[in-house]
Length: 205
Length: 205
DNA sequence: TAGATTGTTAATCGATTAACAATC
DNA sequence: TAGATTGTTAATCGATTAACAATC
Image (cartoon, rainbow over the protein chains, first blue to last red):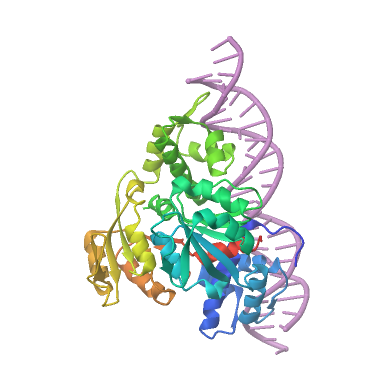
């Protein structure tokens, strides 16, 4: 793999390519071109070729890309050629929805624990996972070596919970709480806040 | 307001500033600086000043920005100084979670209808909204003039449903289905796909 | 007043696009 | 072979940063 640093914005696009290619594969398509893939994802063919070529020469002149081969390569690059254990912190509506979501496993993720600090929720079953006490979270995460967490708790407790997760060794946080989080440089955060996304679009209305 | 075209990437950051400022205001803070706001949201002070100055001179040398004044201005710019009616398409777990989410109203959005094509769900109550038949969606949306939809349906039906929404006059779609959507230029789409967000972070693990 | 902080300019840095030789 | 499409280069375009005069 390439030793030089790959721009973050390219890494952001790879999962989108992966998703589109997975869909094409499901439909039985064997081969695609930068042109065709670009039409699917709304990105120029030149950019797709440039992005992919950062990691190697995965295509063939004249014929384009083998979808299964490119899928393998992208999964390897993104490290989703394996199954990552993931925890959910917050067993509210959103935590429940994520816990029941069927779309994680074939994309590299496995929800293994759910935490909440509400005594009435602890012990409840969501699918085949039992909600555990947030008080035990640091220890449980440390011991199991889990690196990824999804946060579905109120904004008011998001930063302190994040600090605990960082202390427990978590390196990637998908944050559903509507607040910006402060984390060390080696911890990544992605934000999902529907209101923020909607507010971007109303500008154009 | 400025007549020149504002870069999309600036528009993406404004809701993040808005969210942080709203939080500061809730905590009783009256004034802030580009420096302080930048520390909260993880963006450089220079960039914040440049972004905000695209729309006018909202700060004061020496003292910074009045939070309530800047909030007013940002809400006006983003057009969330009003309440937008929004529909949810898909009454599954995610649709339910969004329907029950309390965080929309004070950020400019009001969920007014929920649609599903599953006969067993139609007629069900979620909060004080009754799930309606997707077959009636185009008509209902057209008549009410709704411009914003949140899509929480399977990827397999997302594009056809999107086409219907576009036909009904919807101009902004928040898409939770794990698929890229094709829409006309005057329709905006934002994507929320937890697996895609997670896959971006695993690259760095 | 002195100190702080804005708004803005110019310089730097980075990303995208267009074009085409290489080649399947 | 002829046509198609990659990988890559150079040019263009756009975004970020540093610096500072203006001024509260």
